[in-house]
Length: 122
Image (cartoon, rainbow, N blue to C red; front, side, top):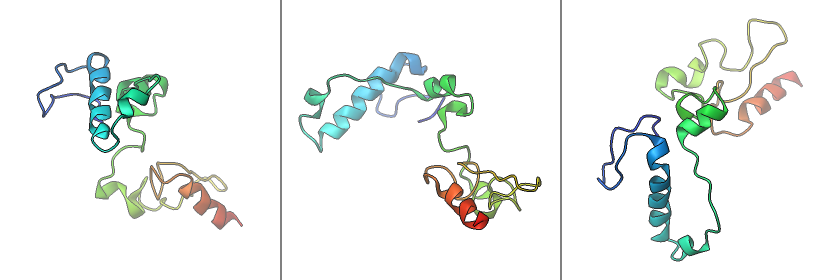
């Protein structure tokens, strides 16, 4: 989700701030899922909607609510993540390795970077 709201393409949700529209957005998501899972809305016993800005407020590392560690442009992938020469998790400090979404294979891959560093340490 974008951290900054520029508008609603469907023209149904009014507002430009997550605090004002996050519940309406969650309603839309449930309605869309209802198309494939009829009766879903009636099964929801409770919910807690978290916006991108709520995520950032809880963890300042999640800038704009980004959970996958920033840009996924070509300049931030493969051998360039986080910077050229350090995509395998090693750092200029001997014995210090970096793991997590900031290094290859990037965010959303579970413990991929940690597994890869562990293989090198064996």
